[in-house]
Image (tube, rainbow, N blue to C red; front, side, top):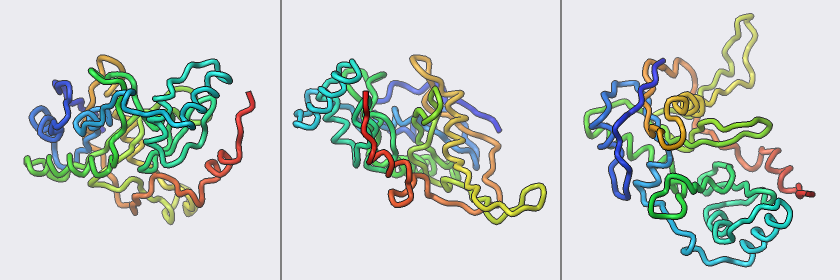
Length: 256
């Protein structure tokens, strides 16, 4: 497998066509998988905002006050309001905000970014990242690049581990996971539970090349990787009805 960064992309502005910009700079081949950082997808879709655009509700002010009191960290209530507006559910409100976005991803602060946002205060995640991925995939196809799946990526921390890794928040042109259940291991035992989240694994691999900070490259082509002869699934975000961790968090209260 090879990871080829798409270099030379300009600062993305609202209305920019990411497929066109990538097609002008990348020599994609059928079967390549294009990973695109959510940052530039959001910028192209105009998901930039200013904190003054968020009138503070009583709940947002209460959250900000509680975080400052318990965690000793000043929290702008307007930022808390932005998180509430972008969330389907707030699972933790102190000592930090852990939210489910409206498209099903669970992450701190509903994925709202305060870095690399020229001329604005915050950058929101794409509203529907899989639809964003499909638009980019279709745009590449219009420009002669057929059979190129697209993954929209973000970076996220993980429970029980330090550090962040790349994850997929949207995808198009390929299943989210490949299903090994029913296949056999090396000893002939049938696999019963293994479902491999390939979009997350490709996002994490691409993030090694994408990098962070000012020198980051927001798009990477994954080459010479094959899905293989496996069943596929688009289930990535665990449903509420079988998410035991979410159920526990609903009953949990922070005791500082």
